[in-house]
Length: 262
Image 1 (spheres, rainbow, N blue to C red):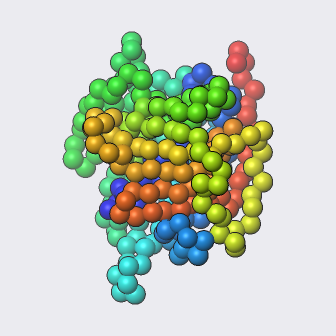
Image 2: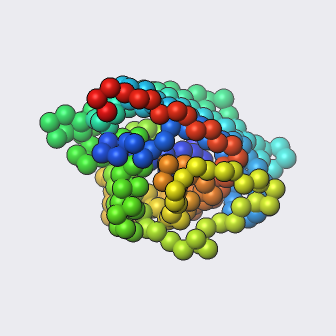
């Protein structure tokens, strides 16, 4: 249940070493709702802060929610990610904290790509673990730029392998299809539109399947509006047992540093 409640965190933040300039550092705040109806109940907030310096990217993601099944039965959920990724997308270090009704689970890890091999070293409450990931697996700030490259090249259907730190530290195959704008969920009437600096956007359907189990049906799917600056809005994540929607409610664009030799 903890992982299902936070599938949004895994899905929402994809980025490519070859096109890091397209991804603009920013801080985005989202309102979370349970369900996709315009009057769906508010269950929490999500904040993603992505900054950039001359050594690489820093990602902070904080999601907090409370789901009330009955007046006396409630579930408090929280997920936090702190991560650092090099500009070339070949090294990612992270720390996650996930809390469900006071039960805390901490994980730290490092993913490196060297000599064509992608290796993950993860330390969780279950103990240390080492994994060899499929070589094309992209890091969190390497997948979205890759996707933007494909969309700019008019390749409407794209498939990418993404490392998901919150998803038990495993790789997901993400299949992306451009859809009609009318297929996106309508924004709640009470939400004020947020101005997003961008030249264009794409309405997308994404499906997420465990890379090690591609014969199975997708674990969850997501519809979203992706801007060419890497900002996402109007997310609807469907995991079968639950649907969570997320709407952009505040956005701050960070400055991009001027780095020698880049």
